[in-house]
Image 1 (cartoon, rainbow, N blue to C red):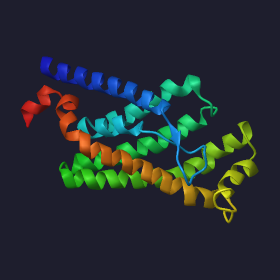
Image 2: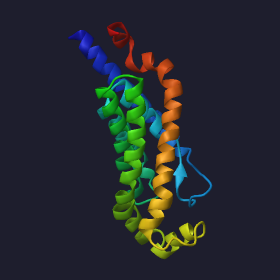
Image 3: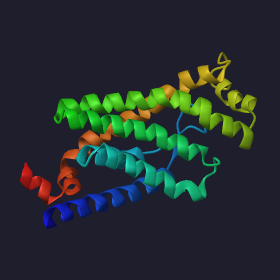
Image 4: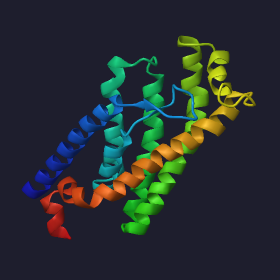
Length: 203
């Protein structure tokens, strides 16, 4: 019982620490070429993906929930951005972690990671179309202004759905895959720390 309690405490501590790191990484967002300036890149999904692989998908989703909750008081998007970010990111880490849990080897990690990035890219379409952008259009700028930012890059874009498909979907997928690539480089050396000594002894 004591050993199980210690393991649970370690997991909770890991989730808390990684949530804090993720919330800090969320601050350091930046614009990238070829997409509208309001589409920001950051590495905040990286800690959640590490946790999803090392502890489990539910723990990874918890990291995403906590780091977005931490940013709610400082929201510049009327909370719609944080909600959308949580949904899209949760789908990413939950898919990756679930596949890896079922197929616990390198192949499973690769399939899970790519599947997670693809799933998050697909879910970003309805989430942005039905949640984020309607709020942005009411709170920040009319939809024609938002569309104008897309059209400044690609004039032929004539609908929000088309803009999301051409810009947001690949942006979200690439963002996820960059986190995946970094994870594959750092997961192995960090795994003993994330899992704890008790897990190392079970191997």
